[in-house]
Length: 313
Image (cartoon, rainbow, N blue to C red; front, side):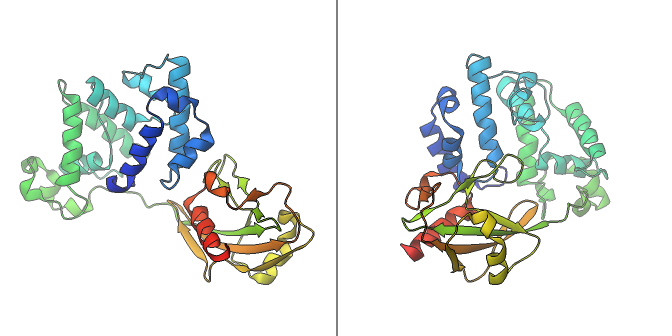
């Protein structure tokens, strides 16, 4: 739910818990199967982390979910925020939650100039939040301050007139509401140029390759990819595609889309061309076009698969 609307995420959630009704079911599933179930949500590392965590809990903890902050931090993919939220709300442990809403409330109420995305700022806010948390009802306190940030102390147009703690808000008193919280500038967006080769052999097979572990879309499948430093044209793709295709007889007949596709990720923009490759040979490592729907793929590739099928079958 971090960057997905509830209405969009709910069907995935219900399908996921229907397919894996217990942590034991999830631990037994293959990674590829889980990634396929997750397809379309993005943040695929979270699906892999859930799988690793399920196997860890079943194999090392006898199927028992940790019931305290320190135990929760041992789970892959669980950091301070998630561990604090679960520990306080589920197990009444005094651990302050820090999310965007809480940062905003605290930075405005105390008129803090430290950037919330700096190491100094994170340390300061963490200390401040844990000083303020309620001793008896930490879970209620955490949910209350998160709700205050979501519904009242909003990023823009906050409703200060209805805020229950407005009387003590320093940013309101000093007219610095719009200046809080302070954030350091983000890293510039990285531009990448992807050229995918959609192969069609004489038996309607294509070639799919599984991505490695150290880049976007880890372990998902895609068409053979040629990444270049900038956009390339028909002549250039013909000159550089031979080694990647490993075919003796083929021709590049054009592109799937009339214009390049721009796929935007958190810190990257992918400028993508899909080149159609036809060959009279038979791919030894080919996958029938009518079977690639079973493979877990990024949304960008799934859309290309659908578009190709609609145009060529």
